[in-house]
Length: 183
Image 1 (cartoon, rainbow, N blue to C red):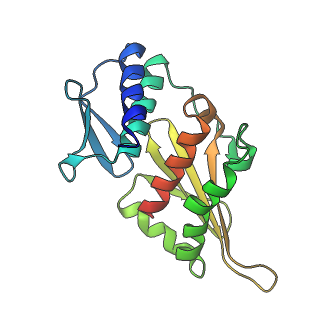
Image 2 (tube, rainbow, N blue to C red):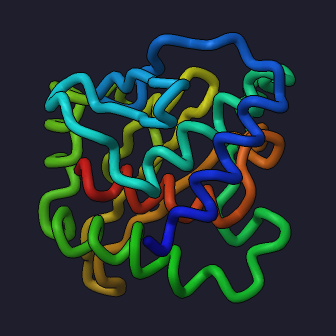
C-alpha cells in the first residue's frame, strides 16, 4: 500500500520517457520481465512479482535509459561525496555498510564468493574489493578492510560518478541496500 503512489508515478515516468517497451532487464543476478499492460515487474528466476522498491528502481533506471545513460567515468565516489545526501547517510550506513562489515569483518576475502552468482569482478582497493555490475552502466565498488592493531574492520561502497545522472539519492540508498542483501 505504501509504495502504490511511487509505483504508479514510476510507471507514468517510464511511459512518458518514450522508452522502448523492453521485455526484460538484468539486475544483479536476476532478470526481470515487464508487463506493461498490468504494470507489473516480474522476477524471472522465481516467477514472482518483484518487491515494490526493486520495481521502482528498475522503472526509474529504464526511464533514464530512454533518455540515454551517461558513460561511466571510472571516477569512484563514496556516498558522502554525492551531492544532496544530507540526512540520508545514517540510512545508507545502516542498510549498506554496517551489514557488510558484520558479515565480512574478519574475513574480507569472503566477499569474492559472491562473484560466483553476481556479475562482477575483483578490484584493487582495501584488503578485498569487488566491482558489481548492478545494471548495464551502473557499476558499484565494494571495499573491505579487516581489523588490525589500530582499527576495527570497515567497508565502503563506491559509485561511479555517472550514477548522479542515473538515480536520485533515495534510489542510490535503495540500490545499496539491495546489493548488500545479495552479499
